[in-house]
Image 1: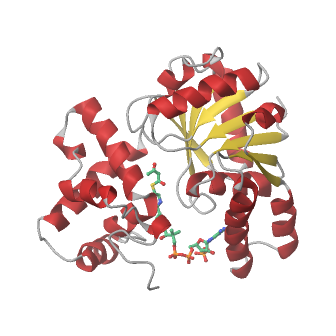
Image 2: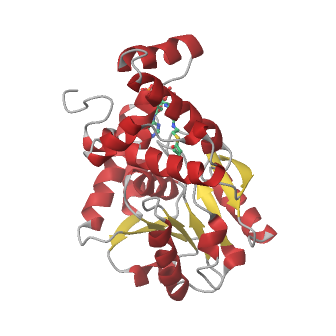
Length: 285
Ligand code: CAA
């Protein structure tokens, strides 16, 4: 199947990042968002990131302009009917995603592929909300999408070989290295990542060290580009909590149990970088 148009559902940090790399790879991109201002918001986010790439010498201004010209936003789901592939990137809420998948199934051509960027929810449970479960899979991107090289493909119980092969080709075209994971909670990456982040938050809460000491220990002692608390801020504390809750419910294993501090921070709206406040205060920088 030849892909010309990719639909993205959601225009948060993941949706905008996915829109950016798709547009850079010459796909026409239609981003669906709930609000009427989706077009300026989404284009603004994509433009900001493209400008950064231009200022770092990664991209020419001409290619950045061409990419932004391929991105449009809409508040009407029916406009995604033009898409050959739709990638959903809304909040980690199973009921919300299922309802979107039901509506998308009605709107899309029967041969179109439906992907979810979920970090932890069951691809199979989303697939069965549609009449095309063989053409549903997980395409799990990493934040920041233009920079992180991995794309984790998740095979639901119904996902066909053709759908997986299709997603591998699109992933390669987007410049990503793909791995295929089974549809188990957390897939591969978050099964490894979440216990580490959860333990760092619990250790910080227990008074092991300051935010800076926790993060410097990992950066300087282990060579990670970010410490675990800065990483949680980047992922979003609400997303980190949602993934931890899904994994804890699935495995009943204390390694995944969200520390009380994480829950409290989410309750007061300290969600990390995207709101300017998390373990760090980004409003001052
Ligand atoms: N487009 C292209 N390249 C860009 C870019 C853009 N918009 N913005 C930055 N870059 C490039 C820079 O040019 C730079 O490249 P070089 O090293 O070749 O010069 C590189 O990206 C790093 O950028 P910066 O120097 O601006 O920033 P940094 O050194 O502080 O790194 C970071 C920032 C890339 C986020 C780095 O801290 C990092 O790799 N962190 C780890 C992030 C991570 O682990 N993400 C996964 C989170 S888990 C997840 O997302 C999934 C989930 O389900 C929870």
